[in-house]
Image (cartoon, rainbow, N blue to C red; front, side, top):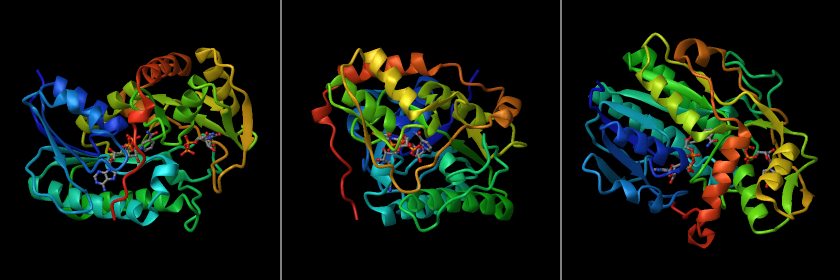
Length: 324
Ligand code: NAD
Ligand code: UDP
């Protein structure tokens, strides 16, 4: 039987956060979703509002908040390059001040706290696939640094609170994850390609399309989150969570066209600065400590995501809200 816990999910209205809240509510936990709706829609969580064990708080994680909880999943942070570069200073504040605030809360409540870190801590990697022991190759002054360095600093804070205050922490490094409820205008490759294909627009491949990513379906990711949070204290991470099946961006474009039966053309646009050339997780640690491997292949997950995109009205999605 599951022990009912009070659980805070920061960034809980976002793409991943809303699915995590859903899963935790279904399990009967007392769930608090905290979000400032910078990159998300209330519609992602309105269906949960009728549940007595779900609460929604509009709050910015860079400001302290006083709550009593047993577990915290810290997801608050814009995740898509277009979103995190919208206000890079705010992105860094969200990672750093947000971490300090949730770590302070966790220390006071003796709560366990999980940080949603990222494969971006590896930057444009010289080691392939990337194991957790690889220290990365990040440009500290480039346009992606607000996100990459913010997440790296957050990992440092988590480890220091753990060493200094014996805080019960977990760190998960997420590789590209996709699925229903991605923001259709977040600029990420999966959402761009599907939106473009469904509306018959050209599909924009940045660079020559030989750069690779490894795409994980959101249900696999959420399962790994739950296992990591509730696993043994002997394994705090960092742990890579992602699907090791690696695809070129051109292959993704071709698969999207096939699954949507689109007539779109593939066109090339310039590669953004510091765009990583290869990315593939080494998931040996996740297999060993969490008994976790992803189960949804790209073709299947992409088909489900396309089905969801077909059912939404993209006009209802707004761009990030300026919040200085
Ligand atoms: P998302 O943009 O849909 O979700 C982020 C949520 O955080 C949004 O609801 C947003 O409004 C909220 N938020 C942003 N700044 C905030 C602030 N200052 N205070 C309160 N809320 C704030 O993105 P996502 O894909 O669901 O990502 C969730 C987490 O997972 C992020 O921390 C991201 O860095 C991490 N991650 C995601 C991926 C991926 O592929 N999806 C990969 C690596 C890491
Ligand atoms: N990309 C692309 N066309 C698009 C959007 C993205 O070719 O319309 C490329 C981008 O340059 C990168 C990859 O797809 O090489 C993944 O981009 P995304 O923004 O989804 O995530 P990243 O892994 O770079 O953070």
